[in-house]
Length: 433
Image (cartoon, rainbow, N blue to C red; front, side, top):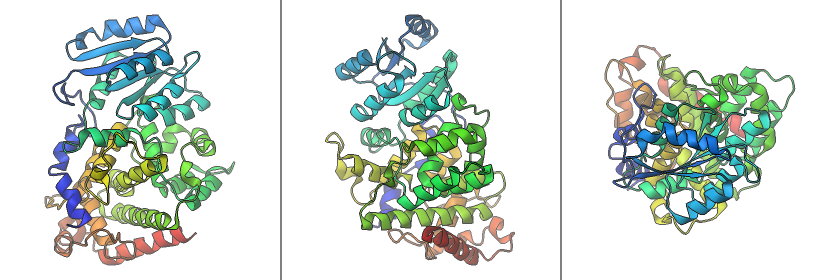
């Protein structure tokens, strides 16, 4: 069985799995049904050093008492003691607390209890706090936050996208705070964004060539905490939402790019293969997708193998004895499942998550349009016929031939194989810098 076949086998109905996270086709996340982790009640821990804030949460969330077991802690130390005593699904923590603040608490949670989803609730948006929040949390809410926002966020996070390996996939995805990046890319990104006179378009181009950094920008910029008013789907719109100074501070902090130390040569070569394939696919799908779908498709193409990067991040931090590594050994299905779960935890728009989930599935799109997922699949298969191919995966010539007869592609009068070769060459030139 090829790795691609294995990935498909691990996701028998990828769209259903992604929809289970509570996202609808518009990219919004309506309140999910209770019990997404099974028949046990969800356990949610709220942490704030101000008792009146906790009392307010108790009152506003009384309607969830039949669905959630809620616990309340007035310090980070107390919260860690409660987590050590009993299982928990979601932690919602204030940022500014005396002694152990929210960022430190959630960092401990990610290390000791990676299966627990982490939500930051804060009223402070200073640059330094924003950087620490970026590393610590999965989701971010402003303080004060209405009960509806808290409920919707918690209910989204109590659902897992993997039916086959739910607990293992959640633990692996939950442990990820940032993603591996090639040292050369770190240097290039730092040089561009470190310039005092850098333009947003130039910064966006540099950021869009880094998979991990793009994912982090999309995670942050899709949060109301960072000022999002609409779904953010590209590096440029993310930088506009966050503000260039905040993005520059994120790069300078180094906390998001901790893979800048050298990897083994064999690993660096694999990283380069994954990166080049993703960049070439993102460039090509930008030509193939409809204008409305283009930002989603380009982001999904760049993030298509984010699960493999998450697995690599796990090996760097050391094996977790609570994780069955046999599930994620080799190029098995869980790599894609981990990636989908991570994007769900980070709250990325539904079309992006769905397209990543369905990258390895055969598509038969409607003649009216490819849609995001099918456009990414078609671009991926075209790139598989170029120097930017991923040698672990198959080419699927029959499916590609069918794609090339689709009205959306034939209407463009484009030599799509030639366009794929050009995208591959462009990605290769970037990789060689």
